[in-house]
Length: 298
Image (cartoon, rainbow, N blue to C red; front, side, top):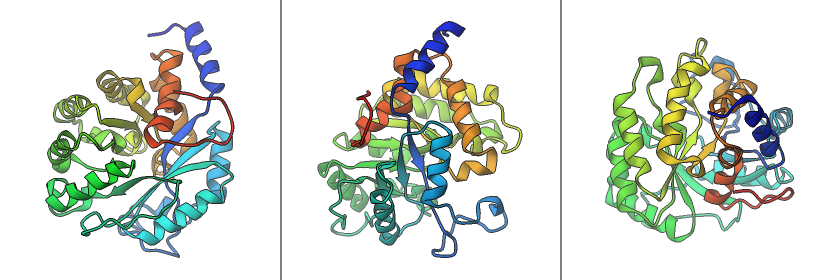
C-alpha cells in the first residue's frame, strides 16, 4: 500500500492524463423497449438518459472520454450510439455495439467509432451459448476486424466464457463487471478461481465496474468491495484492468459520483502508473481509442 504522500502524488499524476469511463449506457424507455429494465424494480432509472446527462456527469467527475456500451439486441441502437458519439465532440470516444453474431455473416457498420461488440450472453437460455460454433465463428471474425468483444456473464455462463477465450486467442475479450460476482450473497471462491483462470488468458482484460449493483444497493461499503477489486488487480495486473462507471445502472446504488470516488479508494494501494492504466491507459489501448485532446497514456 502507498502512504498518504504517495497517494496524493499519484492522484496528481492521474489528473494530468485522460480519465476514461470504459463502460456506460444511454437509453430512452419511451423510444425503445429494454426487456431487462423493469419499471418497478428499476423505477429510479426508468427514464431517459441523454448525451447531455452524460456531459454533466463527466464534467463533474473529471472524466474526459467514455465508451458507450450496448443495452439491447438491436442494430438500430448501435446506429443511434454511433450518431451520439459523432455528436459528442470527442467525449464518447468509442462504441461497443451489437450485431447478430449467430448470423452466417457479420453485419457491421464501417465506422471508426465502433470499437467492439457485445451480446448479453447472461440472458441466453443456453448457458453454453458462447461455445456454439456459429458464435465462435463470428467472434473470430470480430478479431480479424480488430474489434473487441465484451463478455457479459453471470455464474452459469462463466465456464463457457472461459472455454471461449481460451480457444480464440486472436480475439480481444473484455470481461464486463468482473464477471458479476454475487457479492450480496457472499460469493467468493467460485468467482475468485474463475477470475484467476480468465486472467491466465493474455487476450482477456477485465472491467472494474458494476460492483455496487452486485452488492447490497443501499448498504455497500468500500471495505466490502475492496477484496474483489484487489483480486481483479492482482490477477490481471493494472495494465489489463479498466475503470467503468456502469452509469446509469449505478444510480440504483449511489450514482456516478459515488462510483467514481469508490474507484479512487479501491485503487488506493496502486502506484501512480497503475492508477493511470486503470483510469484510462488500458481502455485506450484495448479499444484503440482516438482521443481529441490531451497527452498520451498507457
